[in-house]
Image (cartoon, rainbow, N blue to C red; front, side, top):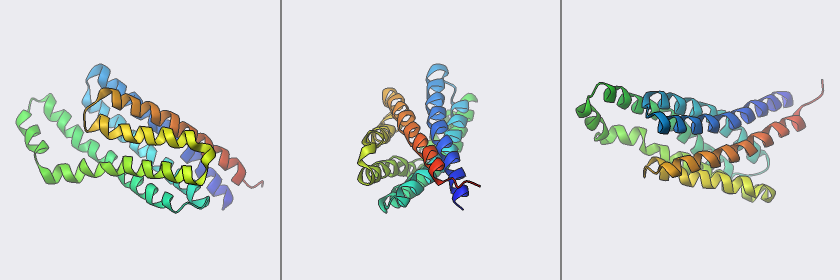
Length: 198
């Protein structure tokens, strides 16, 4: 059982390192090329990798006695799933835009129930990450830098995505690369502690 947990810590740790790199790389690609279709695929892949990273991080904090981590992890997981699913919505926009169907794009954008059920629920992602950063700080004050980086990335995320600030998008990505890099390293280090010699 411990070896299985150890292996999961390695997988979630690797995903924590990979996910934000894909996210930042996809955003930089979009800013450089303006290609939205490929960008949505990159973001979808990033959020897929974020899911096991969040599971591993949440499990680590819960095993250290944090109940708040369950709330943060649940919100972050829900937000990551929303982030992945909304890429289909954005991909549809991209295809319609390529075909000059501006009327259809406007109609989709102004359909409240569609926007509410895809984009608006994504706010759970930064809220969940901020909650996890608080849980981390309360559980292990020596990891304050990880907590600050994670909260900073989460705070900049909606500013970049909702307010349309390119600088905030890049800053959020950089904070995530640093924060989840530290989280991933901690998860893989934990796997060595959990591993039982055969």
